[in-house]
Length: 443
Image 1 (cartoon, one colour):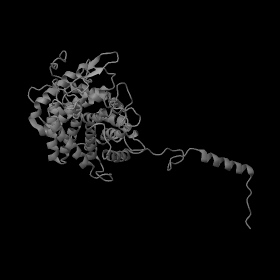
Image 2: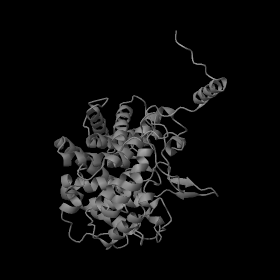
Image 3: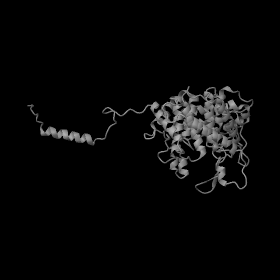
Image 4: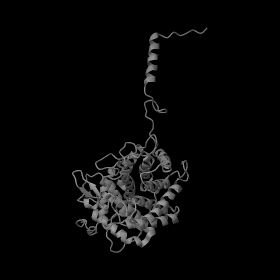
């Protein structure tokens, strides 16, 4: 017969207390060793999850706030699909790119017909909104088609579409050489109420809109040829008249002043202007662009603080720092890309807005209720998949756009094509005359 070991009461009480404390303690990560945190997701793992979420959200049947927003989102998402390091392996929808390109193509065809139509008496007043805000969507589509051509991906179709986009954007150019929200320049609310009373006329052109249009137009020069030369010359003069002494670019030319180094929103806008000017044929050695490059090197951390839509600064920041290389690119990879990785939503895998809510920044978060477009439209919870896809696509592009993977900057027309004799650069351009009835010349 085995002898029973007698355990002292004191020991039993201590064991019971230990068990009680163990069950009451908060649980640790399942596989994490005691005293260590669970390993953070790698950048590659973040990309895989974000790509799957983007794929699913772009396939949603939910409505978006408008067709322009949907097509812009699909265009940037398609760039991500092209840059996907895994190809279509493990994706939810193997035909994701086919479906996106079909929708974008239908939109471009519709824009070609819709923007050519003349308004008639008796038209529904709301009909003018159908083809408003087109600068952004056509600009994003143009960038996508340029990447496809560079990759020799459906090159014939992409070249045909890019020529159409270039023709439509050329018709969007306003009298001062810049671009506004659409073919009419201003949105359908031409005057903005001011807090103290009175109104302010909405500017006909914006640097942020011009950046999208001019990047697409510059990239289109390879397929559109000399037909774009007059448009390009006017666009360069517009940027020349807008550039500040710091090499930065304001909200619109009327706000030029001398530049204000403390305005955090100008970094995002200035990165877009740098990319646009390089696409339009302005060499990196241009004196004004050298000032722009110097400014961007100092302000990389401000790139996500864009006005109008913060993630645009992340997108253009990725492109600008790839072109600048050196210190600017190293700082982008050190400070901006890790913020994108950390902003992945643990529940959905989407990549949220990484802005820090600096003064003037337009947050696009799909989680914290600060999305400006959804606020202005009174909510729109059913838009969530598209808002989420929009932010994810712009951020994911930045994670994917590495040298050697992104092709549209290779042999960029800005480097390869000769410039027109006598055309101006930002350092040399004379002041532009103002649009008729709109104040003094821009100096």
